[in-house]
Image (cartoon, rainbow, N blue to C red; front, top):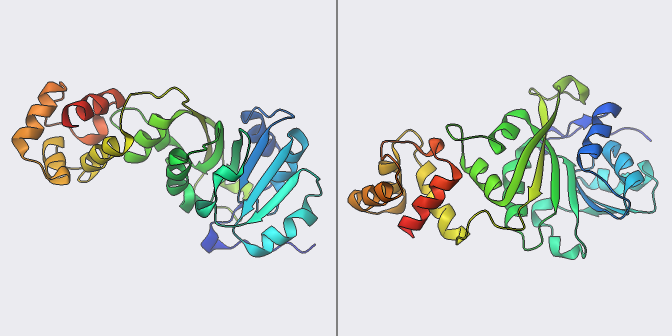
Amino acid sequence: MEEPKANKSLGQHWLKDETSLSLITQAADLHKNDVILEVGPGLGQLTSHLVRDCQQVIAVELDKVLASNLKSRVKANNLEVINQDILQFNFNQIKYPYKIVANLPYYLTSNFIRVISQSSHPPEMAVLLVQKEVAERLAAKPNNLSILGVTAQVYWQVSLGLTVPSYLFEPPPKVDSQLVILNYRHEPLFDLDKKAFFRIVKAGFSQKRKTLLNSLSSGLRLDKELIKEALAKAKIDDNRRAQTLSLNEWYQLYKQLN
């Protein structure tokens, strides 16, 4: 079968390095009764590894041609292929606990993590190969935190895996990739209303170069004196910036402002 050219608009970069593919499946800690959701299987290199080690692979592929050809490339009875945008996918149609394993298109990462985090049926675990810089943002510590990092760490235990250099992909992207491993927090990190919590976080990051006092006052449309009082009660200097706060400090601030 003739190999299709990668579609740059869909962020397609094929990973064919067998060692990297094996290490990705190892990071997912696969068992024979596992159900795996693979996002963007492409030519099926990773799919071929997954079908060997688990009960079922549900591969969701946006590209119609790739989706229609996948079963010809990967001949396995435990493979189901769905031609759909993963951001429109109904995760509740997977009837069992499941894991996600994917070589994600770079453009998809932030929205995808938001979608699985807020899903009523999230995976037990997500093993995602993403842009290295994004992987580092997901696992960042205070001083380097972003909305993406706060979101990921509130919902998931985040750890980093292998780095995959760009030259191992066809065509090679401009940057290296890194594996990020997300384990779902069944016991919430904090007792909070997540919608209200993230409204505060988004306000804090809305003007990253400004102090928390200014960005929160502007983003929440609240009087500066009220914000100043809340920050003081949360024991946070009002001259600090959003990226410096720890998750616990965001929680303390949420308790004062909510």
